[in-house]
Amino acid sequence: MNQRLTSFVLRLLKVPPEPQAPEGEPASLRIFHAGRNFFKLKLLGWGFGQGFALAGIVFWLGLFISLDLAVAAARVPAARQPAPAAASVAPTPRPAKAGEATVAATATSPTKPANPKAKAPRQPRSPREAFAAAKAAAVPMMLLLPAWVFPVLWVFKLAGLLAYFGQLAFTYVVARMDYELRWYMVTDRSLRIRHGVWNVAESTMSFANIQQVVVSQGPLQRLLGITDVRVQSAGGGSGGPHGKGGDDTLHTAVFHAVENASEVRDLIQERLRRFRATGLGDPDDHGDHHAAPVAAPVVSGVATPEAVAAAKELLAEARALRAAVAAAAGE
Image (cartoon, rainbow, N blue to C red):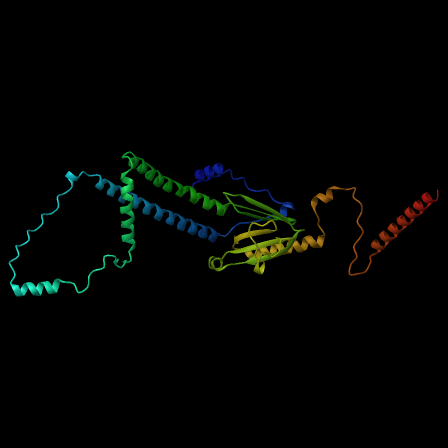
């Protein structure tokens, strides 16, 4: 892809640079990207959209050209119109005999009087007939327009064609960058996802809030060999059957259209287990060195010696406080 055109589009859309790595050990950073077939899928959608747009342009351009020709033909003076073909001279009928006149009168006389109010049955119109009828109805209205309007309309038609062919390269580059500018970053503490060119979306999720990792794959994705990996945090809910939540929720991070979904899932689950086993918390909490010590937890329902010592210390402080309150009340 042309690097100059890519740089121009990036500056025009003000796309931010590559995202910084999320919180965690720099050596643990792993970066994933969308699969190659994801770009083929986007390119297929881009091609269908451009094809439908071109078909609409051709239709309306053909309609306007047909109307222009019809209006031009209607504005030709009657003197310059081709004369109709001379009608053939009808032969002079010979006088009929008496018997022949009676038979002819009997044959031509209707048996029943015609009903003047009766309407002929309406025949179904083909698309071509409907188009011709619509054009015939539009021509009288266009005849009311001044002559200078039609050159102006042609200017707009040519400008529309130029705009269509000019946007082909721009929209192709945008589709290509939407595939390339996707970052899925994972460290030992958190993950970060950024995607989008028109609307840039970036989300960061800490392992302390992750609840489950869901792998989903639709029929078209199975055909292309790409998969979605959804990471859901606390409070997100399932969002639908089989845990398929939306892509743009506050509690769901999606590794969209990756080719190595099992590797991504196993990496997140392995680092999530390690994170919970080591008891890592929010990195901001480690900056406060004057925080009060936390009592050791109770493991499997059995109090540890550290927990017993902390409980005795709290009990002694409570008794001393109670004695001080009683002495103050006695005075």
